[in-house]
Length: 190
Ligand code: HEM
Image (cartoon, rainbow, N blue to C red):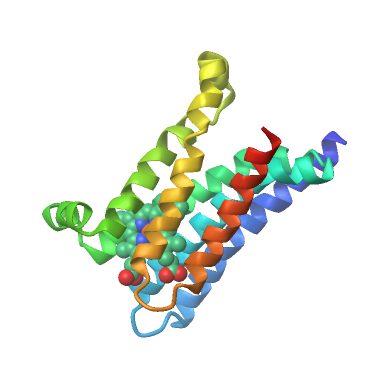
């Protein structure tokens, strides 16, 4: 059982790295289109959000099926979501804005879609930093309360995507519907 759990985690670890491998391959093969920086930012943002929703799906999945393994993958998925969000922010800061801090600040203050992205990122930061066993022990019951920040973070991430899109709202609305379903299931349980 312990062995199979280890293999499950290793497999999911590799699966979470696969999008990054695909992105690197596309970058090397010149398959990122006319605006590669935008394509990279969007790709990393997509995966940060998908993995965040998968993290949130673990508990509802356990409630619906009785399976316990999704919950044991939650931390790994959450950390990968944050990892993609860090790369998303790094590429925006370094390759899109060339570390022009004044312009970045202006973006944060004046463009609501960047403001919501920044807020989502800032809410995820303490969760990633406290995702280890030592923090869990130190914070006790407060750890659980702190980790409820994942809900507003996910809502803000979906709003961030929705505000960014100018015409075709189908994709952000789909993510919004999935998030509403996942949050709804928890609410019904309570
Ligand atoms: C400081 C934080 C963040 C900044 C500065 C930021 C910035 C951006 C930018 C510049 C874009 C592309 C806009 C364009 O191409 O016109 C984008 C898109 C996106 N971001 Fe963020 N973002 C942040 C945080 C996040 C977080 C935390 C998530 C998810 C957890 C996220 C998910 C997305 C998604 C899903 C897209 C759209 C991808 C697509 O078009 O398919 N972002 N963001």
